[in-house]
Length: 423
Image 1 (tube, rainbow, N blue to C red):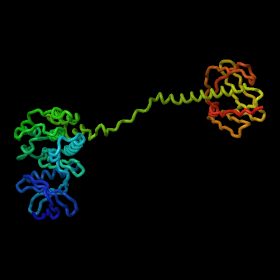
Image 2: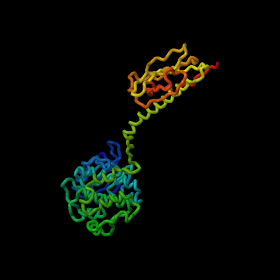
Image 3: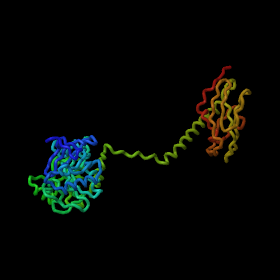
């Protein structure tokens, strides 16, 4: 055949397929410089069906439906459609090469088909001839629904056309086989037949007689996927069984329902787990209290050590830190303030809420932690009896209240060892 250009724009390059209704060619769009598919109606084919397919395709725009680019008539009056050119072959080709497919590939293909059906059903369009030969793959492996030649749009169109029932008997829904109107549930049944074949590598009903196949789809219960292939994924097998129900009302309602049950491709490997809940509020409230108790304990130990050191040898020249505790009235015995005798050359510590330690022998002064200017409430605790030392002027059994939080400093817990000068 000599090189042919359709409508002065589409140059036919190689045939992709041919049937009684039409021929499909790979072509080059001379105006947009891209590869396309040109579908030409056969001379004796039904022009009404061809035009209906073009209108149906033009009403849809979805990644999982073959896109229609143009429609018109050639110079000799033949109607043509220009579609996107898909180079990945058909699902029928794939199943003939290898079947059943793996779980991931089966799920991905099923999700693509269901998404395309959902888009069509939302717009009132029923395909009525869904089968692997009408599912094509693009170069990235995405499945797309094609050939809406006998699609029903709204309430228009006839039930079947010559040769349609026999030609697609293996995927025909029970209601279509019984001569009843087809709805979205009919496409769901055909989807179930396709999914059954993806999972098992065979059709639910098989016969060399087309009319027998029609009867089996209408009357016989389909086998369970698990009976044919026990290791098939349980969730996908259950969906195939639901889609193959004889009663249309017992099936998923439409493509959107199929997509919802498929989970849009979600698997255990890709599911995002929720973040763990935060710890209970009670535990969070206990943390500051525990920290405060630890600080009080360290301060108490440091205070006891500082007071105990005051009873050392009088001959030594060790300079102890100046400690001044304010009197805290309590309900028990009278509290007497304690003080240690400081060397004459040492300046007494100011009576503020922070404590400063100065050593006559050292050249560095340890910084003290300054407490907040507001005075914390007095903590009532059991009286503490301090040991009697030679430096205590009041009676030997003086009782004092524990220091409040305003007297606790970090320097008490980390006081460097004192330096003792020999005689």
